[in-house]
Length: 484
Image (cartoon, rainbow, N blue to C red; front, side, top):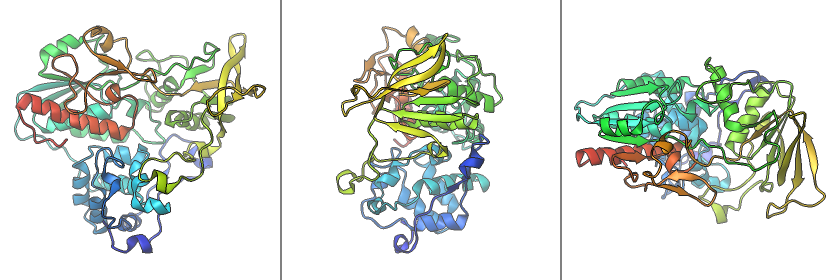
């Protein structure tokens, strides 16, 4: 905890944003950092609540010891704070920027709608640690002689690689794209997280016995069987990248795209990379001067909204088939769990028109080119309401309704018939492994992250990567000192 009476004396405050009129003119981060004194005051608000739900299973998936590092920040002990934070979370500068903060929903002070600004303090600790030089390579003093290959360098793959490297194993990470980071780099826009943070972690990990092999598509450029033969263990962290099929007529019109190719292309553009590598569309997808419609109500849809505004879209409309949520939740019925309530992302606040309880009937066009999106109102069962049809003008439309599993044209294709897969009720296909040992049906092959649990949060991927690293270390050495 922080100051005993801090929660009564200090109001909640979080970092402010640049005005929307300014931030849509660039792709850089737009959060205005708080001063050390302001962060210290926010950490002081952490109360002695008895049972801190913020870092239990209802709050933080990696079990960050939030009251502990809030107290350390309040007392000015930044080095101890980052050491404590790193004991549960390898990359707090990532989660401090892109995590939706379920910990704040579970905070006792959220019963009064004034939770501790946990996410703000977490990011501040990580940024301060870099500023003061506390984040440096921590190479193992004893090497085990074991070699581990990791397929995929997203948050789960990176977390596992760092843990296994520090345990003394020789770690090789294979990444299909030209740079490490997975969807952290190519899916999340720079205005939410700039990519120099990934580069700094990669540099740190290279000093910890981790080698990155980029531009290598496992299952195509190198066979999985070769990795299983050459390494003592292989961990598959391929993510969930196949878009969920919308089943909307007219998807073949020019101007209709899945969300991820659009986001990947813009991230490549910002990173000064070619936009046409690794199978992504090579035709430029640009929203400048266009009317844009985004189908979907989640984070990916919101990222499309913010990207379109920065490219100069004339108008952006976001369609959500769900009813408009209530402005506030029933605390006594919901707390400490994540509540369904009206939330407005920074991208939506930049001028998006949001339509709720609206179904997308079809994309319409002329001469093969999109001209509009035909919609209708839907009832509580998401069934169209007769006579409520309308058309929204659109030059560009993005489908952002989620993902149904990993790409099936490489590793899964090679291991067809050997690797056990599971299809859930929403049609997502995931690799089967439990969350204790993370072993698949293929000998020497483990899996973690979205490829196992389905699309989820960065913080869940980090947790799974850490736990899978512990399981692999234990399998190779008979015991492990890595935390679960």
